[in-house]
Length: 248
Image (cartoon, rainbow, N blue to C red; front, side):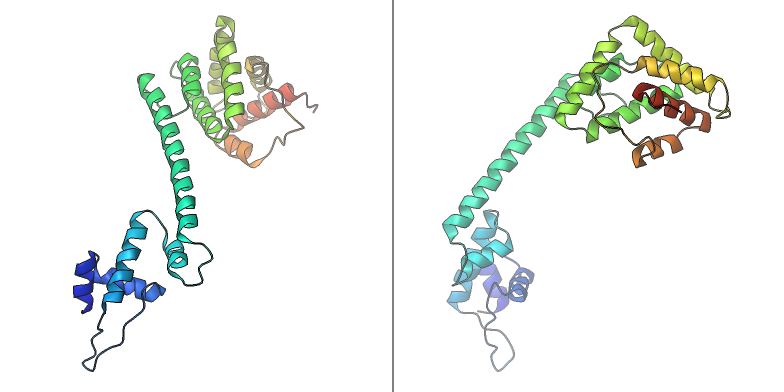
């Protein structure tokens, strides 16, 4: 058989055959005097087996192990590992579908979505009122929600929901957003910075213990500060100092 005939018999392309030659999976046959490769039945049998193994989901390195005479893993071991991997993928897909269904059942997702159902409930209760700082706050919460562990995400959402159920706290949040918006063109030394910081600190919920002494100038906070006007950044920095009990 020529390469085209071999490929057609097994149901692959000639390019695939050449790729398997290049990887050493399929031995190259001797060439005839006219320069053409001549494939025997054995080549077709091996190529068919490669196709069956890859269709099961084996990678080409695993196929090589199965085909090799001195294989470090026999076929049963490779297939068992593949079955276990597929089981993990199934579990991950089920979890993704569960989360997707929860988002769909919650109705119209927030502008920052998709976010966890827990944060979606928080964002629904969080006042906005067209405040530019409220928009930034929601974006930052979505960032935190994405990077947090499930335990930290649950703790944060529970704490936020707890305070947002209090009308007085919601009113303070609206006041804090208004104060921050008013600092957009202010100088960092503006006396309103301290009032804004203390109003912000009063909005921080209890139940969020901080382990150790965090770096108030770490990379993530640095990015937050850079995204704010100078006076707004100073107010946020000062709020963190108040919450953490850091003396100036």
